[in-house]
Length: 483
Image (tube, rainbow, N blue to C red):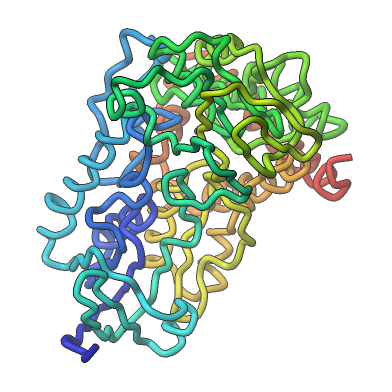
């Protein structure tokens, strides 16, 4: 295909998902750079375009999205399992929000160019070294060469994998009815004359599988017709502790102080998670099971109660093969009732990828610099890019946090997380930006407490007193490998 166009830009941002848009939004706020965004999707929003229709955020809308444009109305939910807590944007709301970000904020700036339905060719590292890149239209095949004056920003490195676009890592036999969560709302509408599935077999133990189970039961499915294949139980973040408003100060900042104290006192990884559970920071669905996984999935206590209604929980490891009358798991074979439908929730939202420096010659690879906030992390990365000199200094402020998968990986991840926050706190200008950032969530709570508010000042004092000991003890736990 002949080349049809040549462009120049300061920053080439690959990906118009949550990280790419949060980065671009802050970048154009802090400097006069020109930005070109290239993405394979038809609309901005990244993986949200492919998500199942009943998906919502795990944590409040108040600190998700881009810094310059609020997401949601700041209301509390008056009904449902999130009742009394701050709203969680739905997938449709998030997609609409990102369209507004693009059409009302980024494009009107006159400094952002957006090319959807396009694929960047080659490797970002090679593009950064060459100072140029090339992308191809998925519709026409036309290619465009781009001269990059400053940096290539690979905002796809930590992109989630969604069920509707991944390939199962197990074999599927003839006659097996396997669907992604996206298909559930239309399952009976497409074939209204057919009887409903005899059983719903949910494959996977992550937040998506939990969403599916909760949706099925909420839509009227009998809990005894739901079979849940759980390769590993998971620790869960208590959503009550993530509320970004003064009336939840004790639950949010108070629990943070208790977490610091738990991290300072824990004698092992197991002891740490028990302490985090005791202070209300962590939940588990089945108290008699010891979870071995932690991905920062966040739930309300009411959701845990719903999940406990499913009694047929299969714990025989990962799925290896599905047949019309049985499923083969890593540790055994389980019969399957005729007429069952399998729901594939085995795609990991957070694939295990090695961390790398965020700032590299000619290249930026946005990653999580504060758990578990990818949009805040991307926005802070953009701020640091503009206001600090040299990759060494920038990486000092933006250490890539390894996302934990096992419990033993939690202490090393939190150590980098806390070290980053310590670095920001030592820099007056950066500290102020964090406190004023909409995406921060809690900085304004901690900095806005009246000096005469003795109970809340006491909580802040506990937090500050425990933080150094927490970092020291996390270093021991990380070195010991969680022993």
